[in-house]
Image 1 (cartoon, one colour):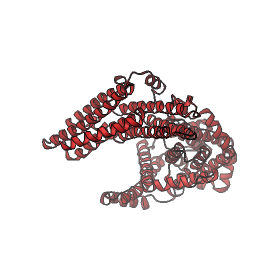
Image 2 (cartoon, one colour):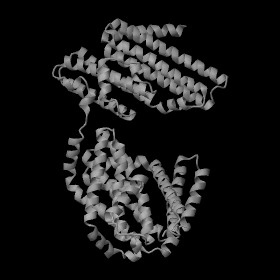
Image 3 (tube, one colour):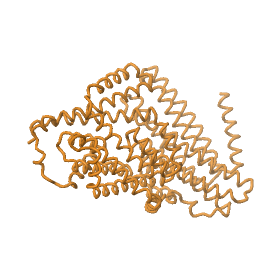
Image 4 (tube, helix red, strand yellow):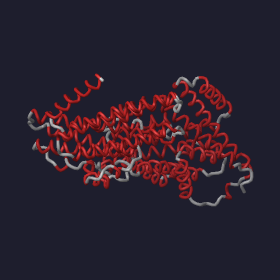
Length: 567
């Protein structure tokens, strides 16, 4: 039955097609990613504008996933409302149908070699000879990607040409449209690309291997399959990510059900425009656009209601991040400042836990206090990225709480205390960001085949554990004088460690234990490590010392620095 069907040629074509899509998406994002982010940010002030913006940007980028990520970032930053975010997602479903139109109108009408080969040739040469320029390199990748898109399609067409000459479509059992819908769904879920599924369906339809209604059902299934990646990405994520994922899922499910129910009517409309015998592939592209547009029109009046439902079932879990300020009134400034001080200490502990995770250190080696264990229980299974997002949210909660306190009439001392605590919260978050920025380099040190880098990674971990054991003791100490001395002592030790590291690196360079390329990276990572530790210490200074004690602290540090310089 399958004589003449070249499965390897089909798979090769599919691989080339998907690689072409990947190159196009990556190059377009790098060429104009910022411009499209600005466009989405600027032109989403209303639901209608959001839909058109989503459609336009997705049509250009050819990736609804990329647009969803932009939307997620803007909603998380508070720049875009949930309602307008849903509008962009609705629009992206229309924009993604452009791929079908390109493939249907060009891929099956023209001779592929006439333009695919020049695109691949000129693009490939451009990557080699213009690779030093990021702009021209990405333009070249775009050309290669576009060429591969149609070359892959040509391979898929060629894989079934001989097969179609002897194939009788009436021999295929009538499984029903739901089965074809499930096939489309599974193909997209596995390949994570509705465009690739669309290319396969168009190829089979063009070759006469599929009836039009079966192809239409597969396209509906492909639309549903695009939600799998989004849903998987939302598992364990922050609430806003779940809201975006489930809005995408709900829209595609509702649209799919409507399209299946209206399939006879939609098929009739398509047949009036394109003759299935002459232009079946263009007819399928029209069907794809039609049912997505109908879905948007049906969903549009309920965006506000749906947004409220999402907020109800996936509320922001801000209260779970705070331990003190959520149970304290801001009417009494003194009580509010005390709670804010405790909350910032809580933030410091969360930062310490995050920083330990950056170097893959079990926090049980350092911490044992009750508050820390409680927060560990509440957030033990979240990713590093989610931990960092929670740190930012917690700092934002502290800032919001301080704004409420400032509504009271504060004394000079209370104002100073408030400002110092806020500065301490900022320094704590900076500590996490400083280590986060060199996480990739630290991971490379761990897996490097260079003994010096491996040893330094181990040394970084040892230094962090020793340092944080001292910090944990410092946090629990109630004697203010002892705190001041401890902070100064640790700062001095950090400076000595920094100097020692530079000395070790210099020796490694002389003895050729480290390549020149890794020298600058090693020094940058060490400086980030030291800076992160200093920022935590300064945060504790701001939170745990009084104004008078900080003045004394600064005087002692100034004298200490002067003596060090004199030496």
